[in-house]
Length: 304
Image (tube, rainbow, N blue to C red):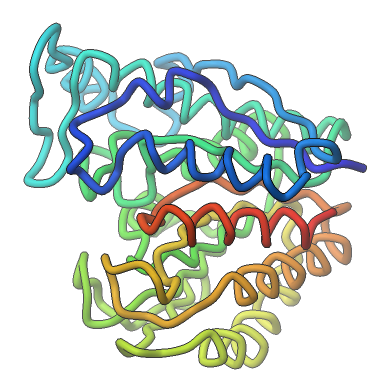
């Protein structure tokens, strides 16, 4: 069964400046690498649907949602926090980004696809239930998880987050929900300066600056994999950030695209064991454009 990529032109219209690291060139870089790799001939590419306010409210306070809507400017920019800005096209992009995750859940849960990658922006995993943060407006992966739990009556959803920054928003949203196992690897100490101590359902993998992919692989195999197998997820969701790559100057880890291929292969095998191969991944970070595109292609190839 082929892999599907969901995106939407609206995600490229969110643009708070070419000098901002989270800019439309990120999605262009992914598209360019898909073309040059020949993957366009073996994957499906579809336009995402936008989420509605009721779906966003699965993971976010309604007052916060209305605040974002009311602050959305007709011209110029508005800052939702110290590093999260929006302009007149940002709200639309955020609704399509969240909607992609929901559509992806439908595709895998209804048996149309097994693995779906959402090439979307703005990213989401720093957004808390009532707070924008770290370039993130709505928490796309959390909305997808909440939707899967509500719409399909799932009892066990695993979220894997290998972005170089801890997914603090996802942790906050699911802190008291025993239906969700959240596994997050991240450089430490580093933004957002999270507590590195986890819980049985919030597994944290703090990694020192300069760590190579081997450190992640060892901890994944010895710590995460046994816990995930014991949990027996019915759906695997992935916050797919690629900013741990050694070429990404936004952080200090030393991964390569081969590490992302390894992660993807391990997750596919786990999904085949417990949830009929069902994986939904949403783009998070990754700011070195060539490395980002190559890493996404490596992940997709591991799923084909």
